[in-house]
Image 1 (cartoon, helix red, strand yellow):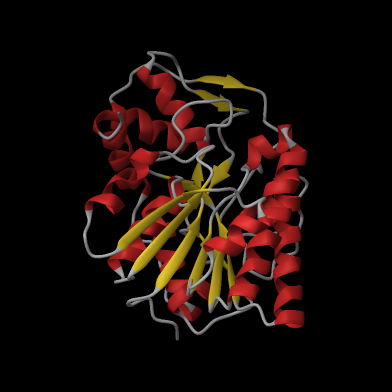
Image 2 (cartoon, rainbow, N blue to C red):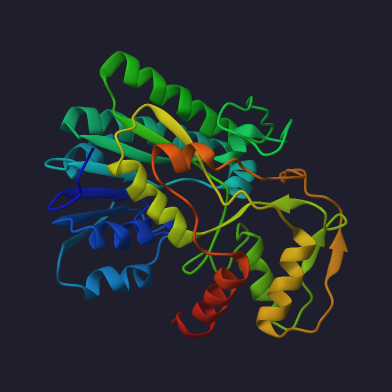
Length: 320
């Protein structure tokens, strides 16, 4: 098993939603030094407030891009472990496919290669439930066939094959985590590529109705961002390598149920509006959590209503 105590870790996308929480979780594990590697395209300095405020670990922030192999090689000197969270997400990948290839595929390959060159002990990295596409059965276990049709899912599937190949050919020790529907504090606040919960919150704050696609029966497996960070720690500390795990709750929440919960949490009384189905979104999501529980000891702890309350409080009090 790997131990983070007194280790030096590097987190790509470390100023982003997930990455900054991984930074906090790594510090809580007793690391000596955390290198935040982020181009700040989506990341934000405010996400690092907690990390900068503590005094137990050295925090170094590098404004750099995973597309630069030279910068990665330099940054990884003396690094024990890497958490690779930098990524172009679903909607932006659909609209900017070349950027998705450059960041998600080439960037991930660069991270893996730099880690091998530097002698990094283990890489834990962000894959996605999108590799599965529309599920053929529920719950979706790790052996479910890839049925993806989105560009984002295609980039993550490619990265999984690359990781397996580099384990076989070069001994890359890695664990890929297939994140389900992540939400929580520090999540993208504005912009064309904001995800559903931030987008809905933005409309509520503006006194506008939230938008539900189709009839609201489309479902998600919603997982709180702090649980995601904890899953990264569990994967790194486990004896597992060259393996993949679903990181979700195993609980299905429909868009209509989510909307009702969010309206209740926020006290909003404006009824939602309905629009045609978004082709980038699968109709149902619910993962099997058994493998993650048994092999890396991870079980999600935060329920949807509790997570929504914390996210709403953060939006009200945690922003600049």
